[in-house]
Image (tube, rainbow, N blue to C red; front, side, top):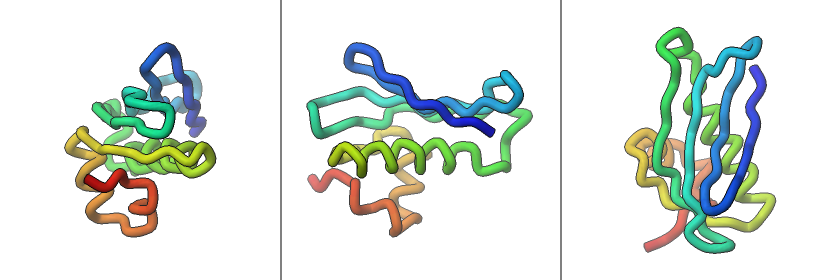
Length: 95
């Protein structure tokens, strides 16, 4: 499984690919230089139950840590993961 990160203009995404087939995608908007908003997560039906969404989230969290960026999770999946996983809450934007 390969996960790539791309940004263009004020948008970005993490995409999981398995043998050139898209397994899932998590998109975000760049609100400010040090703040992104995760707005959507989608996992292909064939890859459900394989923690693809979690892998995408961890890729974005790693990027956020590297660049000192805070995250607001508007996407219901990402929001639920931030509540559940204490090891990623350090990048959570406080209200």
